Length: 478
Image (cartoon, rainbow, N blue to C red; front, side):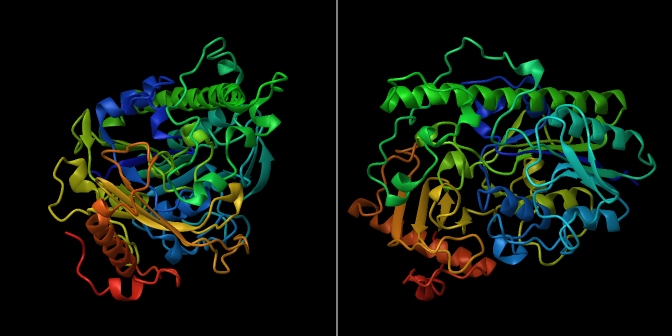
């Protein structure tokens, strides 16, 4: 009988796909992540169901959408006793551990469950000399957080019972704000003029009011983010460019440390003879705006925030240097890892195993659209609550613009608005065609698909979405 695979699941925080060489980055190089992609599969259309840290992490662990796992916003509590893929693997005989960022609350009912060992950062944690929480209490470890998380993970794998399979979650803090590089990379990109994104100086015309109201422009960066005071006299686009250069360099310096440590993990697997039978996953909890649309942070359903990197290596099943164009979601991760381990997932899981995709054999009935919902209305960075669907070519977004009493949501209410983007003719999402008569049929089909998706997963449309009650009874878009 074939031995069940070991699983090494590495997740960064806010690492945009377009800051990875294998995804065509124009601003940095990531040789070790590219090495992983060259030996496995790169998913080009992997998306999150809610682009913010805690909700995305809950979706990944549980394989459920946020209205099911309960973590709709940053302040919504996570019940760590609910079924997760690590706990399911543990019950099936796997050795399990998590090291690094948890960000789902602490204390009874919130600490990690389903792990033989866990040592996690309190909330966001620190880049330098960070504290860690564990079942034994709190301790401070000296060094740089990305190195320490990798050290803890390697030490645990080295001390495991080699007769049983393992699953270890390596959850990095980096490259989360406020972007503090390690000493090794402090001078990286010094003297360079980093290439600006096409939409750095976006004027937010031809879209909903939500875009112009968001508070995450370059001028919303804090002094600790850019670590310098702008020269006097800089205003407008010149100031945005100056701020972008400082923000992006520190962000990419933090990414460089992740890449180096990914190399350490891959080298260890090679040296220990574990590479052939280990599923190695690299991803991020969501995307991130790298000056795109003039923004940092995430939250919006726009591409740079919605898209997640996903690289998977498993030599026994995944062809090297392969690329998957199919639409996948973070809620698919749990069922995929359980399927690869030949372990049945809990019935409540709502994702779908990507095992066929990994083999290069996409099922004929694979999804044609992904569903997204951002619940935290007018909270961090003033982003308004919205939901929508994305297909291969189109994206429909409904800004319903109130939090309906969700924890952490603002009481402010704004008129609802719609956006529709044709990603083929407008890949940068600069012009909504929702009111364009030429797109009336597309708009109607996507509206039906949006409500069909909500009906299928059990998410309730917002009361102001007047067509929803009838739409769920209509046939899905073809």
